[in-house]
Length: 78
Image (cartoon, rainbow, N blue to C red; front, side, top):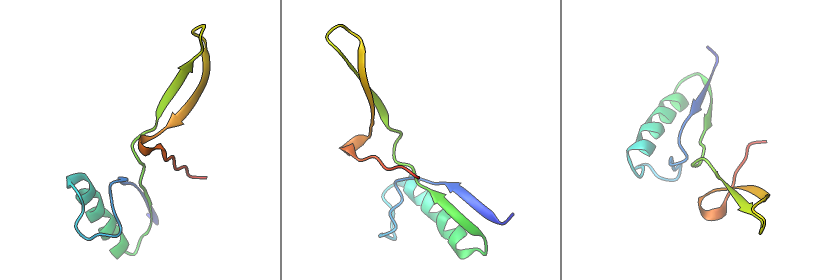
């Protein structure tokens, strides 16, 4: 094995040593172990899955669908 891709958590905060909550702590501990290893690594930290909001027109037809996320911020990998 040469590279590890870890589906981590968006709750992990790199700017603090003590994480906010058990999920962030769990993932941060695994990330730290991978950083200390000789392996190449990539951490994927998704935010909560975006909701799809569908707007209905006056006649009940779908007029648009747009992905949203809490707080209105959407990040995507390109």
